[in-house]
Amino acid sequence: VAGPATTCSQKIANILAALRAVSPESRYIFCMDANCKLHPGTVHLLMNELENDASVFVATGYPFDMPPENASIWAWTMAQFRYNCLSEFLSNRSTFVWGGAMVLRRADVEQNMYGLLDWWRKGGYSDDMQVQACAQDAGRMIATPLSAIFPNELKKDVTFDYCWGFLRRQNWVLFTYSSWKNWARHMTLLFLYAVPNASWLPAFLLSLASLAEAPLRPARLTEPAVAIHLAACVGFLITFHAAIAVQRRNLEAIANMCNHLSPEAQRLSLAQFTPFCLGSSLLMQSALAPAVTIANLLNTSMEWGNIRYKCRWGRVVEVQHPHSSPVRVSQSLT
Image (cartoon, rainbow, N blue to C red; front, side, top):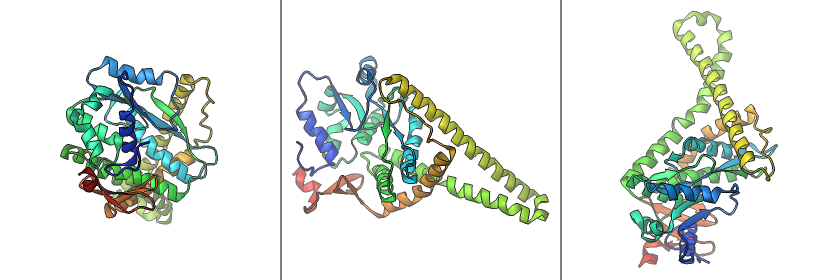
């Protein structure tokens, strides 16, 4: 319907084409991924946020990834990335927008409020991150109803290549921006993802190695520095296991909520959410974080849906469709 995108990402081009086809009587724009499974009443819930609070610019939800039984470690690693993002949904107002389920006022979009349409059309890559940037730069609210979390079953046989591509795409959006405020926020998130988040695996391995070595050198156990170091190692391992236990409890609460919101759907079971699966995927996600970030720092292009995008200074500058030559965004806009 939209045709091949030449000035922005294909998803944004599809949204712009849909906007042109919207009924004149429509008051809201609802962007939803094809595989998003809403609960009964979700659309009404999101619209109410916009109806009842004029300060809200966008209402959004988020997926609850469910790896099936005997899923690969890479499926769990993808899910673990999403579980970290779920921390933004601890209240009904956040700083996060997910394009898989977001509702905007039609008038706000068509009037190009905060330059959203311009940012989308002229080198836009991520539809939701741009909406998020406009809301934050203008001091508007982002509504995240606590019940707007939707089950999403992952594939069982996810490969490393598929997981790597997913993590790279999620990370790459942080290299796109539309203002210096937006850039500063993205760089902060990038640092938190690539540095503190990456500390889980080295800290875990160091703790295990230190505790395994301690009995081999009993004479050193009386040294204050060694005793403090070993106590820190024990403390970290206790913290790690406690974090996994808290995460599983929170995920179980989400699953129970989804079961109550969609009683006619197949009940969600967390039998496969073992401490091993959650712990190993957290460590794997931690190990890949710096590698993914470095890979994106060294590569200014990204493939999404078989379309390659090249980015410079936070904007898409070149689009290449399969079996076609690259198209410069600046030429398409003239």
